[in-house]
Length: 130
Image 1 (cartoon, one colour):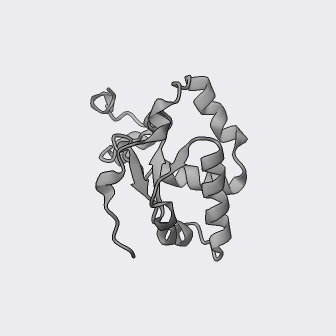
Image 2 (spheres, helix red, strand yellow):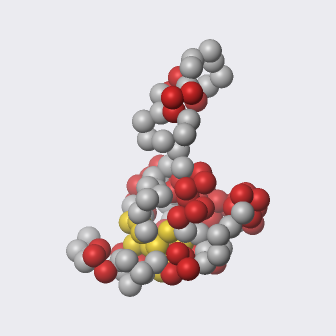
Image 3 (tube, rainbow, N blue to C red):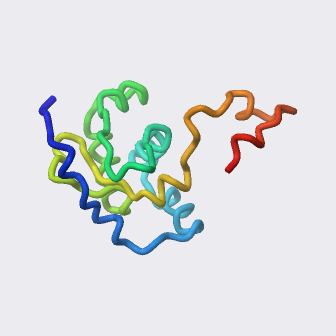
């Protein structure tokens, strides 16, 4: 993979967009086609919303989603770009994209949450909630 200078990825055009309401963010998923929704759901678990940009590991995405054709990945990226969930960077050909931080922050799942808290149980999970 080509090396890129990620220090130039500091001008995220999505930071200048108006903030979305919770309802608008919720409706984003309804508007996405299957390829876009699949990529969006996969990204929710991989994106760090404190970052302005991300590198999409398209090979890992395709492997984990049992995809044989790169066309599905590209269709998903196009859908996320059109809905302002992602934005292009000068390195988009290398799978670097700016992220819409409020969208991903609203879906952010703590990386170190206990698996016991993901199921209905009597486990006290209040210390995981902000």
